[in-house]
Image (cartoon, rainbow over all chains, first blue to last red; front, side, top):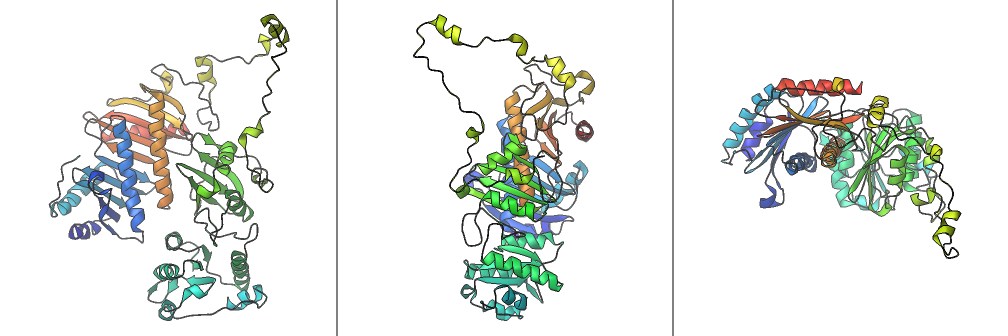
Length: 121
Length: 396
């Protein structure tokens, strides 16, 4: 996983990224992370947990979801929920669907090297 | 700084100076009441040194010195245990002012810690700090700050702009009411973090801050229930019959009762950007809460709704369960607002949640939170962009 995050760290605009194990497995543990900006591990974990919680909230209304993107002015946090965990990334740029289409293949290629199950939850 | 600190303490204290970060690493910080650390060190990460010293001497107060416009540095210093953050002083006046602030930190007075970044509801010595005092300090200092307040399961925000109490919000309340509510939260459970104000919210507090933040007499707990006249029950024991009771009751004059507007009247007279109403006059159980000329439409749209920043539904279409919808939207808003504070970034403007069947768009500005649900299969990005544009148009 460490190697995968070294690759993810090199993706353009990535400020920080992380991988949360599913709650049932670990009590929502931040398994791996990387950052190109001075940010605490807890803050990175907070991003993942918040996004996961928002998706859970929507699932509670029968709107199951696998991907979320939140724009904070010119910065964006994005997460995708897989069967094996939640990947999330903090980007120093705004995003649209085209940016996400550009991002996911790079992220998933890096994550695939770890052998994790990348089936969308 | 050494000179000014000694001057401020009346030459009573002892001030040691260390200019080499490696030698500073070897210091036993626990013998000091206070450590002042410049975060800019040659070939060294000042915030890491701060963390190390704080771990070694948790009781010593730590002041970090840094650049005026370096938010990340300030954030990290507070994260690493700084009790306060000062801009690096440059002129003799700056040094004198900073020394005064440091002295007040060591000898806290009623408003002595002006300018410090309070991290929690505890003061530098671990003593309980009242929210009232923290807010007063920000106002007195003429600051523009956001105080993010959490207490058990509650959280809220207080916005101080140029020393004025400008806006406050907590679950279901805004303005003065929200402020009073937060002041009533138990100080022992309170955590307050202070952040630089990055965006200015709409003003909901017009009352001078001195009136709101007036300290209650010692020992008195602010009790909101006392703001209204006590309810005095009539002595019914003296009345023997229903006729006597009716004779005692004051006559009800229907002409003096307020007129209740119809839905259409309320809708026509409404002010969409009004924030401080606790009632939504146009909330009905009908399927549509939006007049035809104002409605949003897109081929893949399933439903949409808006809530104010207190979580009360304002308008919507095909919403179904209003309460559930507004609770979901408001919950997302609060969680993402908290995340923005944690990341020291602007509040979120747009959130897209993609699912296999539905895709949701949540748009927030300083006036409202709007959410739309689209059918994923037939949705195009353009539909969501149109909703975002429509949402901003509604707030203008």
